[in-house]
Amino acid sequence: MDDSKGTDGSLLAISDLHVAYPENRAFVEGLRPDDDGDWLLVAGDVGERISDIEWALGLLNERFETVVWAPGNHELWTPHHDASQLRGDDRYRQLVQLCRRLGVITPEDPYPVWRGAGGPVTVAPLFVLYDYTFRPAHLSRAEALAMARESGVICTDEFFLHPHPYPSRADWCQARLRETERLLAARDPRLPTVLVNHFPLVREPTDVLYHPLFAQWCGTEGTADWHLRYRATAVVYGHLHIPRTSWHDGVRFEEVSLGYPHERRPRHRERPLRRILPYPRTGGSAEHSMGPGRPRDRGQT
Ligand SMILES: [Fe+2]
Ligand SMILES: [Fe+2]
Image (cartoon, rainbow, N blue to C red; front, side, top):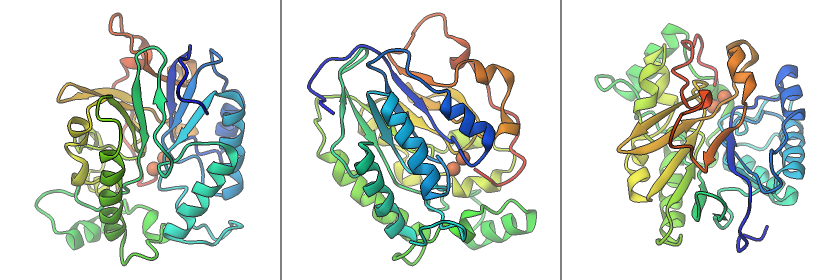
């Protein structure tokens, strides 16, 4: 990809494709750019199997000028049925290598610059995971986990997302925070950014979760000021399966998930890709006026 040229087209985004579902797989097969210059930001949860992830990102990369990927929790699972049994950071590195072979940009690659309409902006895919700090303030980490377990909302990550070689997912998150801060500090400071992360960078979007205890698997307080510190013109995220636009400190946050087939409403199918740039500042379209989705019923994102 040559990031020195100007492009027509738009900076588009989606997440939570969950292509193990046949309906979602068919949806991905039907995804095409509107213009030759369209870029696609994929904010995690493409799937669980390496073969599924390779299929989806490979197909999208053939169709869009540039594809940028940030990992979701589902890619980082090690399912018993998967051909790869690598765990934790080893699996993440395997996914990065897979993306590089396909030509998809990862959090480990130089950040590309979008020079089309609404640019130039640095597009930064991030991988910072979560550290349970979004739990209810009056509960310790152990208490919040125990209550979630008793309530039946415990995240499947507890069984399939291994932190190897770190002692815990929270420790892995701390390492990712430090590494990602180092990478972001090295970007061109003259340009604003579009930050792409599977999990919301601020806590407020989790306030609408049907099960507040599930928020502990949804991000980290360590990124609370990143949208300001790194001059974000937009933050793209998923994971919650509650597609919507919200504003925090004057910065636009876009939850862009497709989600599971049973979660979708008819209008969501009409315009599946969210346009991040150029941003239509007047006459907001339906895709930009979505309210919170229906309450989450289980701890599966
Ligand atoms: Fe997720
Ligand atoms: Fe998801």
